[in-house]
Image (tube, rainbow, N blue to C red; front, side):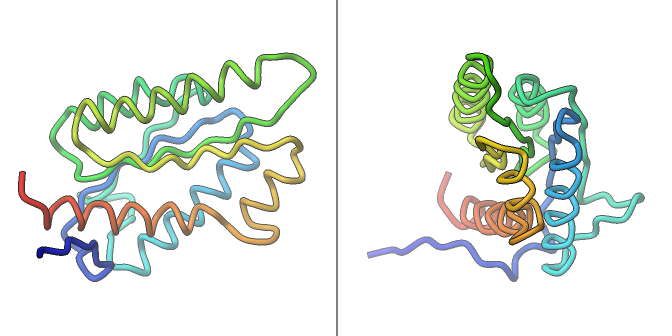
Length: 159
């Protein structure tokens, strides 16, 4: 029996792309900050001159899958992280955006074979989103860890 696992010590060799939605940037900026902190503390250079990390900003969550697809298909990255926040409002717009971004991100991973971390918060209120982006815990940190683990896992598995 062979067991495949990802390890956090393999981060220094990973090339990572992050796609961040500007809409709800009060939340997404905090998610990005937590994610970068996690990556840094596990050996990934996140400096402005880094050759290990690129960050792409998109207008909103609906645009995340298209940019994630382009980055994943480029062959430059071992993992892509998506960060966004969709907060329920008074119209069905929430349901449409959440469904499309989640299906789109999953399709990118399946179509390219590159792990894509789904870091899009879907909450009922701004308060809930802020709690997940740093008031109680910053899920951006967890998304960084997931990226390292998945990048390392995919490198350890046969093609």
